[in-house]
Length: 126
Image (tube, rainbow, N blue to C red; front, top):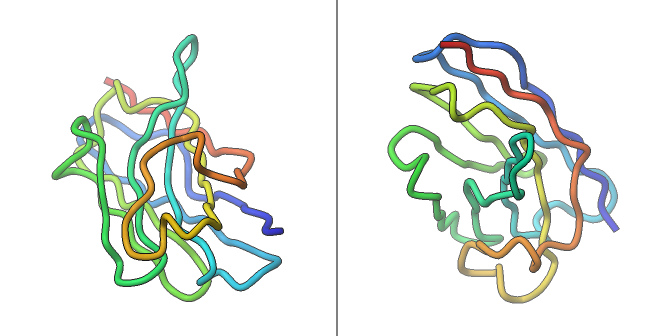
């Protein structure tokens, strides 16, 4: 099992940037494909970005392509968010998938993830 802890959320003006980090403890971090999701008030939790376990292949939601970048190292996964918009306001969650599906390709489906962090609030003011 792995425990996930997100940091880096906060309040930023539209057009600004934030960098979220997700630290994992427990099993070796390399054993998991990783993803970021977000949930705004009254809405479903939605996919934001994902990165494969090996090779660093990535995928993004259309709404964040060109603005957000997911990356990982041996201990953390990151979400660099640039050109933030008020509609990016949400609680952002880090997730880990331990199945073989995410070894060489990013995992997009929320239901495929096995472990979730507690979330970090991102608020973008207009």
